[in-house]
Picture: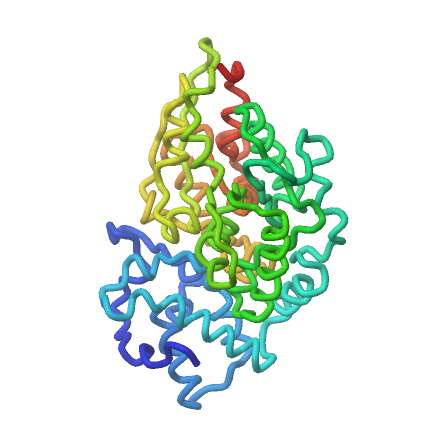
Length: 388
């Protein structure tokens, strides 16, 4: 297994499961289950025991490994400089070995099967990937300045589709030339990669890259931070080198073109940092800049924000496999309570996965009448006069 040499160096100091202020637990799986085996240090010891043939990869072992959401909090907080950058890679390598041995949880198996058969984790026909855009003024990509990449959640989840339409509408209002691949698009492969199916990731990525290169795509706007991360950081090694932006980065650079309504009620907003935009790519400012530019918006920061933000629990494929679940101690429900405690009325998100996870958590917590989950572009569109 790759990175096996670092497993013996972990002495379980516990910093990996905490935020920078050490005031709470910040590992999503540990926060949900409160067993040390679900912490990054616990996984390191389990992997070492497995490779030393001191335990078998039982169903519980598999679920512990796949409960990792790839949020990178452990990488951020690890006290050992020589291994911290390889922690997440070691967990992914463990999953890769499980995939190779055919020993993965049923939910993971089903997700990977759908990705292989349909090009998306929902198991929905590729022909329906364009359905989100039927009511939006978006054309198939030809000579547009940007390819707009909605990703799986944006294309197939009903709430993700609303977000994709909202973002596409706002980009168009800004005069930005965007086109889409439609049914030619397949999953960006981020979740397949995080779940250890490296060969499937390569196949998905190469299919997208073939279309990108044939159409001479040079610039891509990603709806999902998951797609943004993969298109930007993983595709170049496979021959897909493009300028890749998350949509909030584009919006923050075009604020001068927007005119907001003058007379609007004041609203308190807190922003949830998505892991793949924040800790994976160190983008913390763009969405906050957009929110701060709107008259009447008062930003309230949660206790855990930016590099210390608590993951919603949907990463690493968990939005599809539901290994962490939505119980009272789930990270999404914990995050929803933290947002409410900030005094905010709106929990702003810039990731369709986060939107789904946190909206479900607000509902499960019976907090619907006290706080609302809204995606950034939908907040902008509601307060907009129009382009200048």
